[in-house]
Length: 258
Image 1 (cartoon, rainbow, N blue to C red):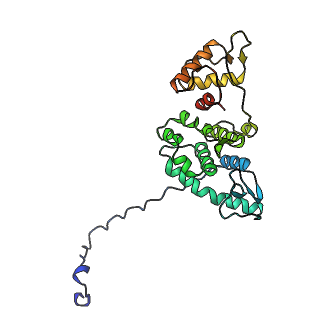
Image 2 (image 1 turned 135 degrees about the vertical axis):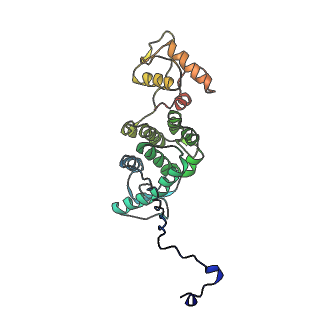
Image 3 (image 1 turned 120 degrees about the vertical axis):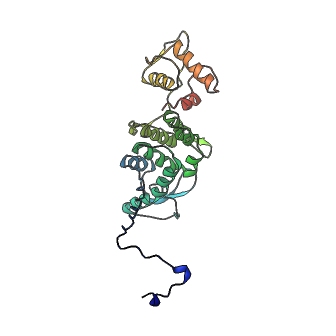
């Protein structure tokens, strides 16, 4: 038998004893399933992108078609609704993968969906280079959520459509209803003026709740009085803002008020 087996030195092997147990083969590791955006996130993207069956120029002069598809799009191009759906699903893959790569903490489905929408609209590099991601990976969820409204500019100008979308993504990220932000409009400046009627209502209460989330002691009673002004000033001082007690755009953005 051995004379028939012509092995070289590099091919030597050892015969196992007949009674020797066979080695146990390790169970192959199953790869983690690729994470995908949930239907709520897809609904948000579709709502803000809109369905365009003919190519158009977006606000920064990029030819776009379907639900925000830009690869290989040229003037005059037309597609069907089914093709638009397929293009969206294909486009989402790289942004889903980008979020999975960038985020080092566990995300729930809505958080993952909001970040995927963010990347789909702004590009994955925007997420990778953002303070939002840095805070998120430090598990500072509320602070990360408050970064969404900052990303509302195109060509250096704040656009209402982007402001609405960022606020919707923030709401989805926090597990809150987002549909109302489809028609959101900037609110009035909040302030206390001695001798004039106090500002009251839900908007003031949201301001107070945001101050509380950022560690400023205040009662959320929905009334913008002297105590609220003092709380706003304290917050502004802590965040290198003009400490005037007036809640304008910069203070709102820092607070994440939507």
